[in-house]
Structure formats: C-alpha cells, structure tokens
Image 1 (cartoon, rainbow, N blue to C red):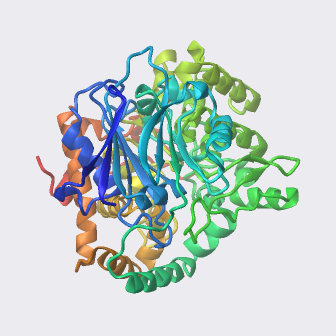
Image 2 (image 1 turned 180 degrees about the vertical axis):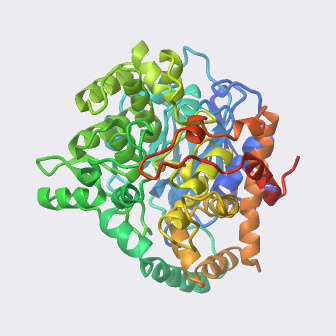
Length: 584
C-alpha cells in the first residue's frame, strides 16, 4: 500500500500521491479519521464541497491474515454532525490493498446538474467514467449491470437510491464473494456523502487479492496460520457464530432481559425464538439451496458468521440477516416473521439503507401511529415510500431523529443523532456507556461491552450494576479502534481477549509484515490515537460533554423484566477522556 488516490469530482480528475510519513503506519479507521481531521473543516456542511469521503483498507489488508478483510469509510457524518467511520467486510478491502492504495480521498462537489460517475480501478490505474446509465438503480440491478459490462470478477462499492437522494440513513454497499450487495458500511449516512459527490460506485477490476508486500512472508504466514487456529478454537468465534451467525445473540439477549422491544419499552420479546439464529438456520436447511449460515463475507474469513437467507423456493432473498437487522426490523417493531424481516432487509440492501437506523425510524413511526407495531405489510409500504423518495419516504430515510421531529415524538433512542443498536443500556450498562461516549454516535462496535457483560468473554462485569462499566467501555473502545485500524473483524476480539496467545500473534503478523519490533502496547496506541483524533474533530465541530448522554428516558423509566434504569454516574463517564490522553 504505497500510494494515495485523490479523486477530485469538481474537476473530474484523479491523481496518485505518495503516502506521507505520518500515515505510513496507519490504516482503516486510524487513517480515515486522521485524514478527515487533517483535511476537512469540522464546521462544514456534511453534504457540501468541503467534506471529503475517505476509503482505506486496514493495515493487514491484502494479506492472508484471517478475518482482515474489513475496510473503512470516513467523513463528517450528515447524521451525527461529527466525525464518522463505518467499515464493512468484503473482498473490496483486499482488492484495494493489493492494488497498492493506502487510501482513496474523494473531494469536491459537482454541479447539481452533473451526471453521476463511477470510479474504475484496475491494474492499469484509476479513472472516472460516466455512470448516468446507472443512476436511480437499486444495488441488486446495479451490480448485475456492472458485472455484465466489466465482467463477473469485479467487486463493487456502491450506493442505492437513498444515497443518491442524500438521505442520512444511507450507507455504502459492498460485494460478498458471490457478488451480491449487502456488506454495508451502513452507519452514519456516508452513502449520502458519496451521493453528494455524484459517485454512484467504485468498481475494482483486478484478480489481485492477497498481494500486499510483506517483509518476512514465511514468518507472517506461520503466524497467520496460528491465528486461524486461535479463532476457530474459540467457543464464540469458532462455534456459536459459525453455526448460527450473529443472530445467535437473539435468544441470548432475550434471556438476559436486554433485547430492546417495541421501541425500548421492555427487555424481552415473546417472538424472539421465531426470529433467532437457530430459527434462521432451521429455515435455511429446510429450504435448501444457498441458505445455510456457513458463509463468509470475504476470502480469508474463518469465522463465517454470515448467511444467505432463502425464500420459500430456496432462492436467495437477501444476504445477510444479521442480529442487528433481525432486531431492528423485528423485535424493535414487534415483527416476528423472518420472511418479512428478510424482505425488509432486501429492500434496505437495494435502496442502500442502514438497517439499524431504518428499523429505528420504523419503530418511531409506529410510536407516532403512522402504522401499528407489528404491521409487517405497513413497514414494507413505508420502505417503498423511501425508494420512491416521497415526502414521507424522505422523513423515514433520514433516520429516527427525523421521524421523531416530524411527528413530535420524544421517545427516540438516539445519541448524537444515531439510533441505538440491539442492546438496551438499562440491562447492559457497559454498552450504554459506549453508546453515550463514543465519537461515532450510538455504536455497539465502538466498544462491545456485551462480550464481558453478557457473554463473559474476557472477564465478567455485572450488566445490571453501574460499577466497572466506564473502565470496561474505555478499554474496549481503545481495543476496537485498534482492531478497526488493522482491518480486523470485531469478532476476532473474543479470541484476542480469551486466549493469551491471541494478541501476541497479531503483533507478530504486524512486525513481520512491516519489519517492526512492536509490542501489544504499540497496537493499543493505534486505538488511543484514533480516539484522540476523533475527539479533537468533534470538539472543533462544537461537541461538548452534553452530547455524550443517553436519551433521558433511559435514566428515568425502569426496563422490565429487571426494572433497572441506566444509572452510571455522568461525572464518572466524563472522566473517561483521561484514559485516552486527550489532545485538548
């Protein structure tokens, strides 16, 4: 990864630049956030000319390191108004790294009457090509058409109609190994930023996959093989997730009383078993064909927690139904039918919408009485409105806060404008701290305390008590930012925390790839630095500790069945920044 590709969509020009010294040992989230801080005016309009969209593979991208196929999209978020990084697992990560791109920086803004373009990357270089023939297309048709034009070996990052219409819930879709859309960098509205740049797709046309340079290849491969064994021998990453996908968490969180139900009214949903990972696996096996949960999002993934959900005829309906999706479009809305959830998921994939934000918006619309809770057909109708870009559709497509403001609803579960994921902070208090304190808006992957609070991975902190939650979240936020910088899947963290040889093996791979003599502390410093950079951007954008708060009803309204509130002291939460050694 020896070059940066700068794409100026105002001038319709591309050029490559050498990687600055300060960026040499950054990748993924660490690099996107640093470039955003260095080059984007924090007070700019997220959809304006001054914002930039940055795409970067992780430091271990383009190698045979297991589960290193995630890459990051970064920008100022139109949803939160702060810095944003959203990542996805896809062969696109390995392709970019193998083509030598440390990062792509998309800057400028075309005139409103300018047609859409696509960025075409190949072994011969990069160029912007006209894409007016693809404007308005959903992701499924777009990918089919692009493969017919460029060949079935390409990989694509693209936006759907929601991104073109600059809706704040729009994400960026990326291919899985079968070529289908659905591997989303979903959160924060970065698809809208891509749409504002009039960039419909990034097409990667190369056979290269694992061709990043490695200083000591033999030692690297030995460490990579060892890491694969560490991941597959872990009970969570090697058994539960492989057998049932991420939706294995549905029954677990329901039993723990932390499954947000009916727009966060209670912590258990009687329909949870019908939309669980176990139910999904059973349906997939009964229908046959492509639907088993054993599926990877990119080559090199050994956890294989993805799935291709089949319709009643055994044909692929969507990929994947993740736990967060099954919750947001299911329990959150009192919908307990996987076929309905699968169809809603497919519509989100096609329109280019984040399923968490969209499910949250549907839940608030149900709260407002637009449709009733549990009305699957009504939910489908509302998503059709989004696809058509009607006034109601635009309200839904701009996220949960948008719906709440339009209908005067106060029960809206957002932090910094972004909807909470599938863990109620009153029953899983560590994740509540993460939701409030992360730079990203409510985001479970930013510091996944569920591992220790519920799954008892890496130790145990009682999820119903406030004690220890701030320290837990802080440590996990540092680790998560480091993992995102390396380009590793967040689910590697179970093995990293449970196996004493896990983290040292990752250090070995980094040292052998780059010719370093790093320790585990150097890897963690990547995470601290990313957090310092992100906090500084948000500070310059006008964020204060008052933004690091959960909606007030979480502190005042007890959650059944445990009848607990979120009671972690705000003073303790505000001291978290000291652990990151903040810039300010």
